[in-house]
Image (tube, rainbow, N blue to C red; front, side, top):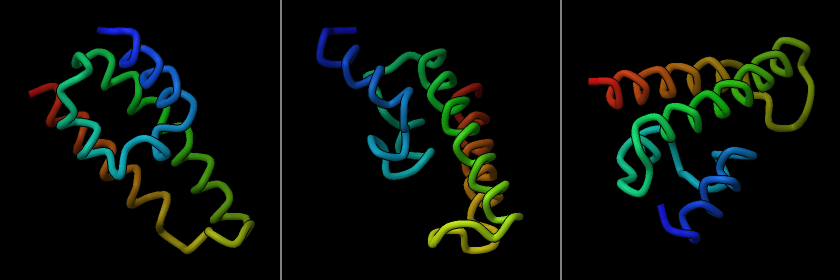
Length: 84
């Protein structure tokens, strides 16, 4: 991984949704290894879980019901694609 990709990886670990349009796009990205992609998806899982918690508590302007669970579904699909 070159220096630019290392920087991108560090940024994506902090907030994957800011770098990738979807978990599917992350899975398709050829700059990262399977292990790196899975690490990024785990980070995204933490974010999605927090979103689900906010949805359950009806917090924030962007807490439409089901958004977090749909995101977790997409993350899990991406993980399966990477592992296969």
